[in-house]
Image 1 (tube, rainbow, N blue to C red):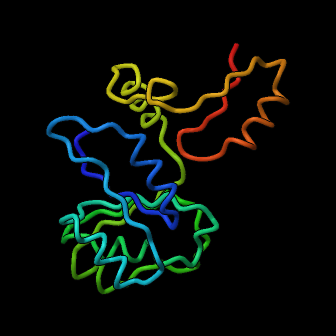
Image 2 (cartoon, one colour):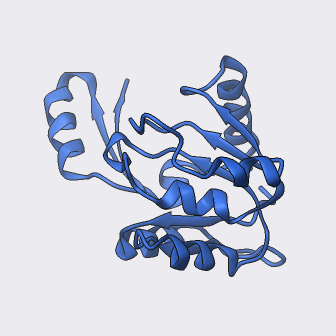
Image 3 (cartoon, rainbow, N blue to C red):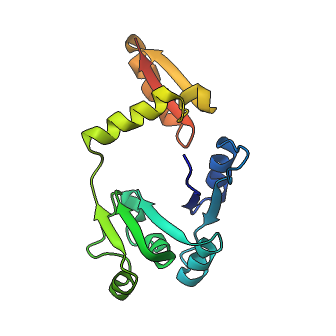
Length: 170
């Protein structure tokens, strides 16, 4: 889609699987990865190693509450960078320094889930072939008819993670 992406996680194996699942093409940089350690200085430096960071999208789950990874990502942003908070963290205060936000003129936007138009645009990307999903993207897909919904639930419970999905189909 034209963006240079740096993905972060605490799990090196999950990052390796993610990187392996995203094809590279001529003129396009591969996805980069950083294993987060909760060492703010080290993790921020690791993020900055790939060049200026323009934008951060944080979709952290509630289990990430209190983690330092969002702070590191914000500290790595260039001046006039953007932060999109969409995750389910339960922190009672923003996990990054106020002076950094002000002095670098950062834009912070929080939004729960998506707008209707965002979903339409995502579907358009899939329909146009720009965004590959499912088997076409190399994902493992378990397909089940509605009558086998219990099998689908069991399959989904055992097949969790990037590139694994369960679909109930007509």
